[in-house]
Image 1 (tube, one colour):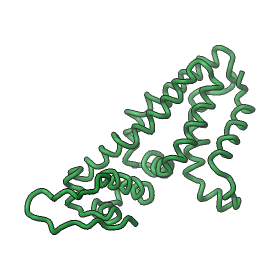
Image 2 (cartoon, helix red, strand yellow; image 1 turned 60 degrees about the vertical axis):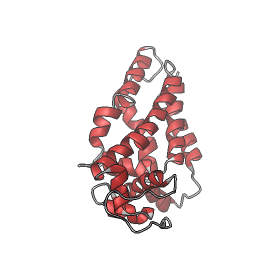
Image 3 (cartoon, one colour; image 1 turned 135 degrees about the horizontal axis):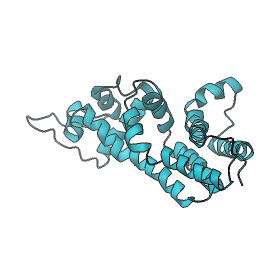
Length: 217
C-alpha cells in the first residue's frame, strides 16, 4: 500500500493541492490496480483514496465523482494502450504473417508493461454486466477487431490464409491466446507449476501454434 502523503488540515472550500507532482497519476494507477483486482462497481473512491494515501476530497478535486474518474482512466490509460496496439497493426498492414506476429508481439509487450490490463479486460469486458463492455463495442472494436477481420479476409482472398478459417473467429482466437491466456495465468500456472513460463515464452508458443495452425503463406 502506498505511503500516506502528509496533508495539512483542510480549510473550507476546495482542498489544498499537495506538492507531489505525481499525485494525480498515482491516484489513477491505484484506481486501475483496484479495479483490476476487485472490479469497478465494488471499488469506491474512499477505497482508492485510502490505497493511494490521499484524501477522498482530493480525489473529488481532481476527478469529480467516480464516473468522471472512470472516463479519465479510459482516456488517459486504456485508449493509449489500444492506440499502441493499433500502431503495431498499421506497421504490418498488407502482410498477414507480419500482422499476426505484430499483434501477438505487441499484445504480450503491453501485458508485460501494463499487468492490470488482462484482469481488467476479463472483469469489465468479458463478464456480463462489465462496466467497459460498451467501450469495447463502440470505441475499440472499430480500431482493432473489425480492422483485423477485414485484413484477414483480404489475405484469405489472396491465398495467404487457410480457406477453412473464418476471419472473424481468427480475431477471437488471437485475443483469446493473448489476453485470456494472460488473465487466466494464475490458474494455469498453479495447475502446471508453470512459473517458468514468462511473456516471451508465451509469445513464442503462440506464434508457433498460429503459424502451423492457420497456414501462413
